[in-house]
Length: 179
Image (cartoon, rainbow, N blue to C red; front, side):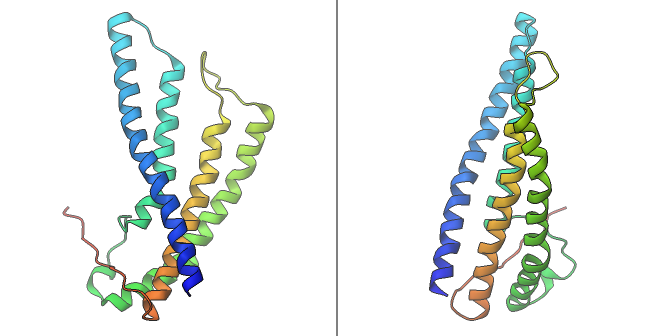
């Protein structure tokens, strides 16, 4: 168990680093958006590359930030039962969810996105917009995002199993949305 907990810590560290990068990407996206708006209204100049890099950055934030959100236990839940059961029951619910839903779905989606990326890479796909960007990097983010989510799911599964066996104390508290 000690070895797999070290693996879990390694995955957590990797996703924390990626999460910090994603946080800065939000700032860069806002700055690019503001700069593009200013250049468009003050100088009557706009760039398709600037518009496209905004959605590339947003895609990175969402896809790569999902695993960091899962790690911090801040992902969205359907709270019909989860908020009203014991901590041990939450651990069991999470274990079943990670094992049978999240990890298989994330791996399947990464597998499904791979040919989409590979074709784009092979063809050197470019945006159809004048001055647009190459497309394969954002398609690679699709694959990487789902793989990182699956890895974080494995890390969370390891931690839940360790908590169920009494080898780890894990906070499973969940704050219901205010709305």
